[in-house]
Image (cartoon, rainbow, N blue to C red):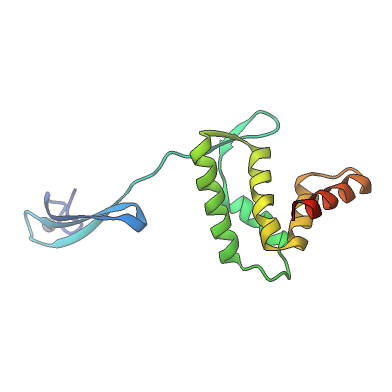
Length: 149
Ligand SMILES: [Zn+2]
């Protein structure tokens, strides 16, 4: 690792594993100018790949999900932090089961959690996600939801 001041070589004085950030923190010292600095190495876990309805594959996109969920939760007593936590939980759960996950599975997983949080948000999210073609299907979904509770 180059020194940020003189670009000289540095040596590692101390290495620490920071569990909550999944990273390694290293204290370093420049061999030339003796300047001390700290570096972080972030350990990336393997990404979750989503298989879309079209068969195309893309990386799990939590910001896209958050946008959709925030819309469903508009004016509902659900905070953005709760939603972020929920998405993180969903991602973790899915990663334990899949390396490539069908998009429908993500939707189901989200809806299960949303149902516990807020019924109105659940219905809103389901109506967008499931693309109900008519009122009957929509009503059926609400009945299924009532049974699950
Ligand atoms: Zn230096």
